[in-house]
Amino acid sequence: MAIAHSHPILTLNSRDLADDNAALSTYLHEQLHWFAVQHPIEIANADAELRQRYPAVPSFEAGGARNLDSTYLHLIVCALEYQNLAEVIGGQDATRTIQSMTPYDWIYRTILADWAYFEDLLSRTGLIVP
Image (cartoon, rainbow, N blue to C red; front, side, top):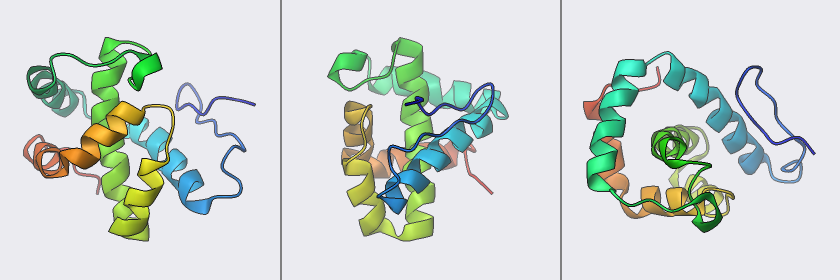
């Protein structure tokens, strides 16, 4: 019944035991929070740009994250999640998996709808997972 989270210790749950791609996506998502902590300047630059591009973001109940700062951070983490998931399982399966993810549906929908922008943002800000 635990909620998956990255800090202080990476913790996963058993919600996605029947769906390997969803379980992998959740694992990548939580690991990418650690990646974000290691790249504060790059995250800050991407965050500032996202706040300009998306000045109004939804509440948690409407598909955002738990607060404003978390929603902008999750736009980055979830974009990295999608990018890395696609590298591992392929674009179609990654898209299908991301489309089914909850919470953060607005975040995931926004990333998929504007993927060319997000891919460019990650590259320009140096947020590339080795």
